[in-house]
Length: 186
Image (cartoon, rainbow, N blue to C red; front, side, top):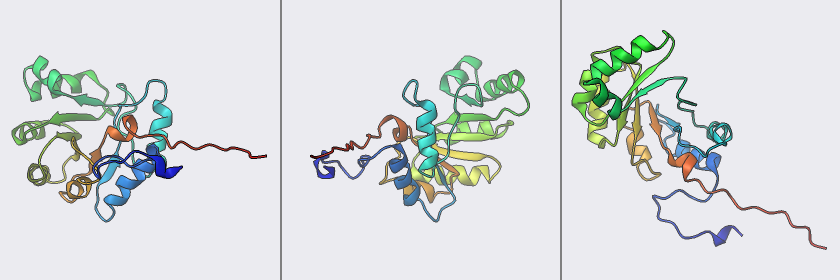
């Protein structure tokens, strides 16, 4: 019975599986240039299925695993000593076809990252104003991915900032499977 789902706030995911959730996010940003993207946060052993469901819902996949792109995070930056040093170490360690993305949560970090050869920046938990400023700073030179605090209530305004991608781990780790059954009645 579809009416037996628990009551949810409007910012929560609606009942339905990964593809259904992804489709809701995709529809919410129609008319913008942004795309909805999943993360690597998937159920152990089900990553391929869950990422396929994101694509079936109209979204795109982020990295499949740690092997197909580099995502430089705060711990990597701390270990290397700076954003620039982390980027240079990563660039030296990977092949020429491997993309490098840097996670930043402040505009000064983005400014530093843009001085180095990167392919994308993950803008983590930035305000709408910060996202707009980041888009202006990058000037289309790299892909910009907004992440953190993304809900159906906020995704449209995030997309309207001009970011290229909007990622949400909730698509795969928080979607509820639709409980369907087929009962034969005699």
